[in-house]
Structures are given as C-alpha cells and as structure tokens.
Length: 144
Image (cartoon, rainbow, N blue to C red; front, side, top):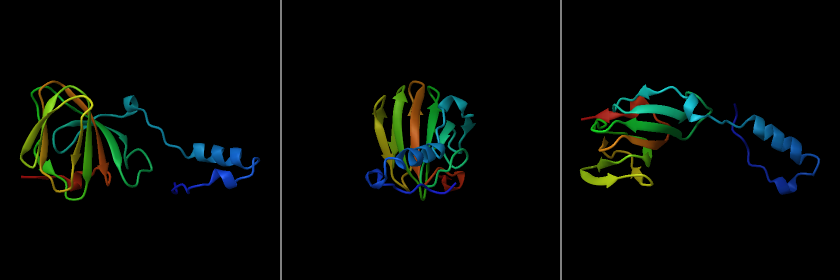
C-alpha cells in the first residue's frame, strides 16, 4: 500500500469530494486490541501489537499494549535507535531510566530516549501502551 497524500478538501469540487473521502476510507487501517495475539518481547514483557509492521502498513512508529504481572519486571535494556513512550493505563510500578527511579501509575507518560537504559517493575499488575519510533524491532533491543 502506498502512503496517502495530503489533500486540500477546499480545492475539490462538491461532486469529487465524496469520492475522494470514500477512497481514503478504503485505505484506512483499524486494528482492535482484542484481535491481536500476545507475545513475549526480548525484555520479558507480554505485548500485543496494536499497530506495527506485522499487522499494518506502518512506516515510522508502532503501538502496543504491554503487561507486566505484579512483582515482575522487564529486563534492563536499551534501544540504539528507537525512542519509546510508555503510557500507564492500569496498575502501578517503578520505572528505572538510566539509574533514576520513579513510581508511576494510571495517566503517567514516560519518555524513553534512544540509548537510555530502562526497566519497569510492577508493584501491582501493570498495563500500559508503548509507542516506538521507529517501529519496535527485536534487533534494536540490547542488554547488559
């Protein structure tokens, strides 16, 4: 599938605009979380890819739901290329980023720059969204 071009809808005639809108809708990608199979990443978290290179025409980012059970933690790691964003949906935990630790809970967003060592420990069952740019790749995950 080729990338969509930006269209100035004000320049379209009234007879053309509905056809253009319909063609854009046909190219739309919508994925439901419940339809995505879980898998274990290299850091040990359970992930369901919502939008990534495996299930959508994603080019520049990926979005996944991550779960870490209470008492568990992801293995400390970093990504050479990817910038990550975590957005905590449920539960509580402690994020460690380059040696700094902070408690996190629902509504907290965490920026993880490329090259930053990080891990997250769940003090309660933890569920969060993880956005990676460029898209997540096992090959970009490095351990101590």
